[in-house]
Length: 173
Image (cartoon, rainbow, N blue to C red):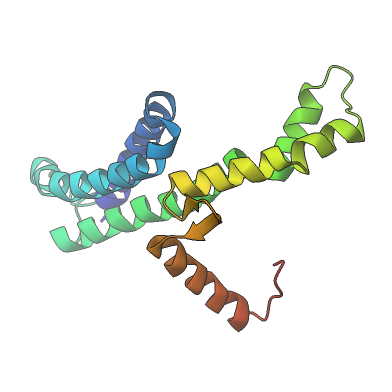
C-alpha cells in the first residue's frame, strides 16, 4: 500500500509537469480538454505501472497488502492531489481578485487609479471576454439575436440552478 501512495504522488508530479507543458504548448480553447486527457492518461499509467512495480520491489513494508489495495491507494492519492490542485490553479488563472492584486503589484507606484480598475473590470471588454470563453468551451453559441445556451450549457445551467435552489442562494450567488 505504501508503494501505491508513493506511485500516486509520482504520477501526480508527472501530471503537473504535463500541465506546465500544456499551458505553454496548447492553444487556450483546447487546454481544458488536454488537461482532462492528461489526467486520464495518468490514471491509466498509474494502474498499468503498479503490477510491475510490486513485482520488482520485494520490500514487504512497501508492498504490504495486495495489488488492488496498492492501486486503490495510488488512485486515491493521485485523485486527491488533482482535486486540491485544480481549484487552486483556476483561482490563480481566473479570479478577478487575484487579477486585481497582480495589477496593483505590477503598478510602478503600487497603486492604480480607480478609473483604470473600473475600465478593466467593469467593462464591455470583460463581459465580451467571458462570453467568448464560454463560446470556446461549448457552453454558448453566438446567434444574430445574441447568445444562446448549447446542450452542454443547458446541462450546466440546470445543475447549478439546482444547487442554488438547494442552498437557497439568490440570483447573484
